[in-house]
Amino acid sequence: MVDDHPIIIEGYQNVLMATKAEDQTLLIDTANNCDTAELMINRASKGTAYDVCFFDISLPASEDGRFASGEDLALLAKKVLPNAKIVILTMFNESFRIHNIIKEIDPDGFLIKSDLTSMELADAFQQILKSPPYYSSTVSNYVKKTITSDIYIDDVNRKILHLLSQGIKTKSLNEYIPLSTSALEKRKKQLKLLFSVTDGKDETLLQEARDKGYL
Image 1 (tube, one colour):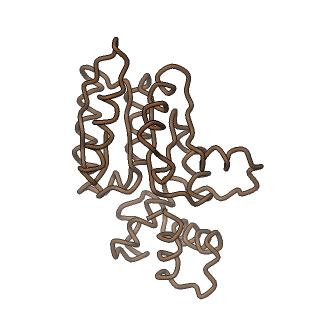
Image 2: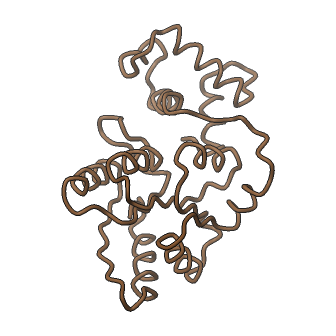
């Protein structure tokens, strides 16, 4: 379980331990940031693999900048722990964000924290084990609607946003991302169109990205 708020992880643990089936044994490892989580995932890939991984989306980035969110960790887990069930728990309930997570990660469980009760978390956990996926009500309602938005922020664009938010200048982005300056400029222009930034300012782009849960 990865969440930057220890009390939330404690709550999840207490619910699952109290409601597990008699024949289930739960061994739960926890992490509060991307660096610790990355180490644990890679260690599990070489030893005892995790059956289920819970990821919050908003997490402190890794020191090397390779992992900036729970999405990055989920993609790593899907790669090195192919049999693990991936569960996303997040406060973000904006439709762009939901669309992006489903398209990029296709999680076995997708739970919006504001939807959750203890009983729903318990039910979700058992369903994810037996017959995924399980989506909480906000996600289910979104999925039921026709997806008309093509808005999708890929890994490179998310890294651009993250680096800009850390104060990295556009001319220096190619030190971190293996693309030409012109290609990076083009992507930044596309992001501004995507987020309806009319004043052309990077600050406005970053604020819009934060408001929609991408930072």
